[in-house]
Length: 86
Image 1 (tube, rainbow, N blue to C red):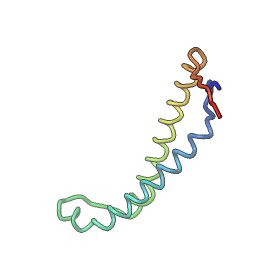
Image 2: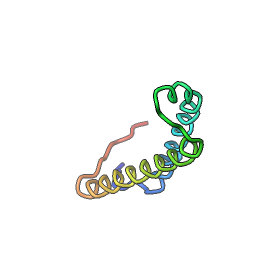
Image 3: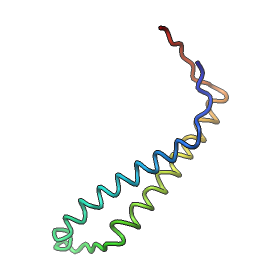
Image 4: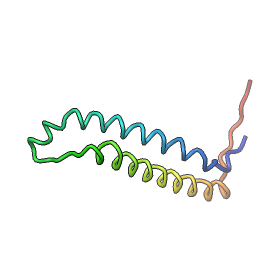
C-alpha cells in the first residue's frame, strides 16, 4: 500500500479541533479574569470567545494546509509504502 497524497479536506478537521481547543481555553481564561485583571491584563468577552479562537483556528488550518502541501510534494518523489498481513 502506498501513501502518495493526503486529502486537503483533512485540514478542516484540524481547524475544528483547534477552534474547540481555543474555546475551552477561553472558558478557562474567562474564569480567571479577576486574577489576570489584578496583574494588569484586560480581558474582553469578544476577544476571549470570538476573535482569539477564530484567529487560532485559521492559523491552525493554514499551517496544516502547508504541511499537507509539503508532504504531497515530497510523497510524489518518495512515496511511503507498507505491507499489511492478515
